[in-house]
Amino acid sequence: MSAPKQQQNVEHKEKKRKESILDLSKYLEKNIRVKFAGGREAEGILKGYDPLLNLVLDNTKEYLRDPDDPYKLNQDTRMLGLVVCRGTSVVLICPVDGMESIQNPFIQQEG
Image 1 (cartoon, rainbow, N blue to C red):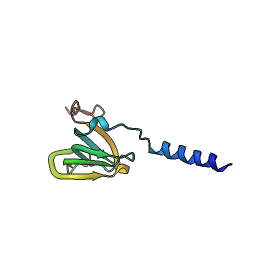
Image 2: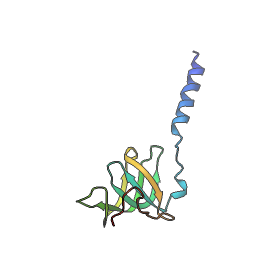
Image 3: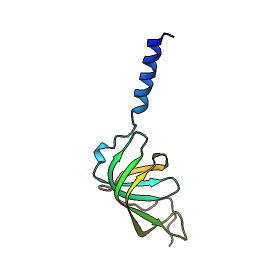
Image 4: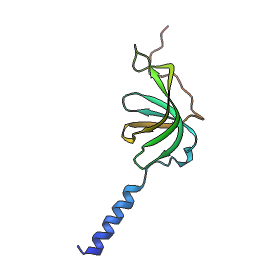
């Protein structure tokens, strides 16, 4: 392969690598909720992000889990302030506006 052809391939790969599959620009300066691998959840104002989904959140609060049932969230929160979330641990991102919690339809109701 000739040198110019190799250079074109390298440039093409670099361009391809920089593209992100998510466009979070519409959520900048808005409240978002983030779920992480391992079950943690946090909510804050999106200040920045990169193609690897590393996030910068401000006025962040973490939702704490029930100590008896790790799959259930408490109403308790703790303020974290300005945080950087590592993209490899982000599982879900959703806007707070327009989001509502629904009951899990797969859990059998008592009664």
